[in-house]
Amino acid sequence: MLLQPKLNLKVSQRQVLTPGLVQMVSVLALNKLELREMINTEMVENPVLEELEETVVSLDERAGIEGDRERSAEEVAAESERVEKDPFDEIDFGSYFQDYLDPGFRTASNFEEYDKPSFENFLSQPSTLSDHLAWQLGSLTLTPEVRAAAELVVGNLNENGYLTASDEELVEALMQMREPERSEPIPFERGTRSKPPHVWDIPEVGGVEDGAVQDGSVDLAAASDETVGAFLAAVREARKVVNFLDPVGVGSRDLRECLLIQICAQQGEAALVLRRQQAHTAAAAAAKNGAASEEDYGAVEAVAAVDNPGREDVFSIATHIVTNCLPLLQKKDMRELTRSCGRTADDVNAAVEFIRTLDPRPGQRYNQSETRLIEPDVAFVKRDDVYVVLMNEEDMPTLRLNQGYRKMLQQKQTEKEVKEYVKERYKSAIQLLRNIEQRKNTIVRTCEVIVRRQQEFLEHGVNALKPMMIKEVAEEIGVHPSTVSRAVANKYVHTSQGVFELRFFFSEGVNGPEGGDLPLVLLKRKVKKLIEEEDERKPLTDDQLAAELQRQGIQVTRRTVAKYREDMQIPSTHQRRVR
Image 1: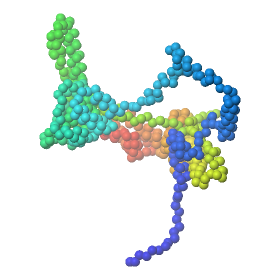
Image 2: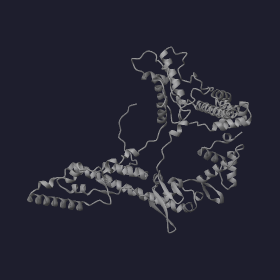
Image 3: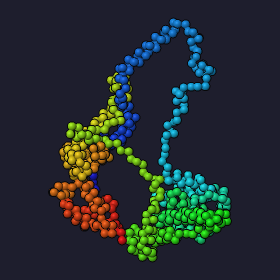
Image 4: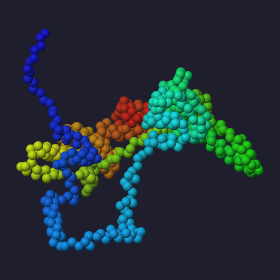
């Protein structure tokens, strides 16, 4: 088949977004803080735009002031030429007396300039997990190899405090940090070193013994190179040091190891406190009976250092649960946990309550997200029993066009390229001003519809919220739904009931009591309240929740209840049941 080129005519329609339209869409979606930043950026890039301040002087007034200054300067210079200068008048007596006849006292105003602390002294940076651990490592006396390995461990922790790198990767990184000329095995120092409290004295717990090789680590038995074995020993010792720093459990591989390390640490601390209490009690009894010598006190302390079997049962049961029964603990299956531990139900409940006090993500306390600053863009204010919409334009720059560049366009001696550049800048500035005004009008019109539809909410609170769709508001103000969606995106409103996001007022409705529609926000609140009030041993199923809502006059299906329960991240009935 022979292919030949042909010419075809086709009529079609397509939407083309001009730069001005693209800017209008982007400006509409900005909140107040973002718009202020965008305006500041535009003023830097566009010299035609300038901020109008209250103390700004017009160009004509400025020209008159400058002319008066020039004339006064010329008059002063002419008079000085006519009058003969006196050398005595040129002496700065103030400086002379201050420098040579200073009595040793100066007023506070003279000290304010250089004794005032700098602004940098007031700045602070929140401490991160790496900074907190590095500060603790700096207070310990460790060998250079262990210190370098500990810094590598700290540098490979995720936001939860877990170690993401394997022992093999840490060994490779540690070997790369070694000096090139050192090929012999690393000689470990045998000296006094400071350790975190109870690191080496805590009894070993199953799953975290020294010498246990984690998945992906280098096996010492298979390592033929003596240097690799020395580096691996340094990595293991560094991991053990980091594990018992504050917060305890950082540097673990998984949840099981993290919990076991915390149990191990608390077991050592409890044993130490118990021994001290028993020693003091026995010493007081011995002193009362006359045994006050150091030998008698040491003997009494040795006898008093007996572990409490009740406390030991809690730690041993908790260790068994974390090591072997984590799935049962997640399901809250107390019956199977009791059967697996072989202890009484009270002992197992005490161990479970102790496990709940542990921190599964120890690194989160130092990696908290920064507080998000919210500044409402709009306010619903009640004036004379009528709610009005007020735009929050505080701290927003007032823009105007620079008249100096306009005169450049009218001057004939201005070059053509300069005129073209100024024209483009003027077009861009005018388009920005129009888009900002269009944004304001769209937001105000949208909020006016919200105020008319949500009068009961503004008066009585969230329980009086009515369902409202973006499409309905768009039809009422005569714009596309996407325009309303951008107008309410990332924007907040200050009302008599508090500060809310504008999207909060838009929600679908379900068939509620008395034939009215119930917003999904209220439906989710009702579902959450029913789950909070249920019996933990017999939690409500999705069918039971749907039936209860139907008895309240809310027509909803089981699938809808399950969907909203998952949206609120509420576990299922099987996971909520306490056996």
